[in-house]
Image 1 (spheres, rainbow, N blue to C red):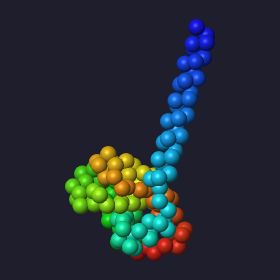
Image 2: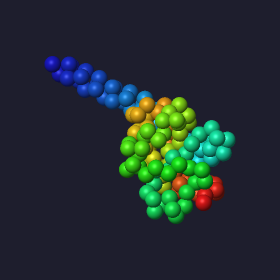
Image 3: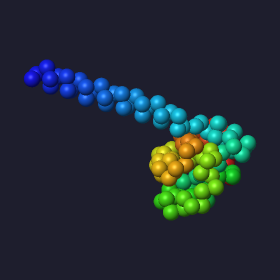
Image 4: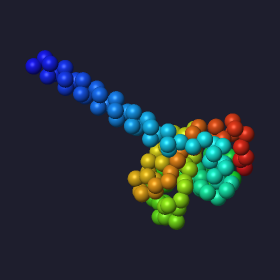
Length: 131
């Protein structure tokens, strides 16, 4: 009986580690640097969706970005249908809200979605243009 319990514990631990390794691998694929996001947007190969609040957007934003606050994203998905098969980059101040936006978009069937790593903080740190 003891061996069986050890076996069960070991199997459980291995399965948890495997799931985390797979998840970590996919998370990296969903991130894009501010520099790469800027290049794709400049070439019209991707659209940037800024999910910050109105006051944040009014203060400073990325030129050409589409503004849809995170709280409104689910209700405004029909507006984005023309981008369903396009590259979409989600962006916020630091990357946390835009990660949630990525999940919402992926759940709605948008397949080419990436989260800008570090958000607007990283964009500014990289010296990229804002307005």
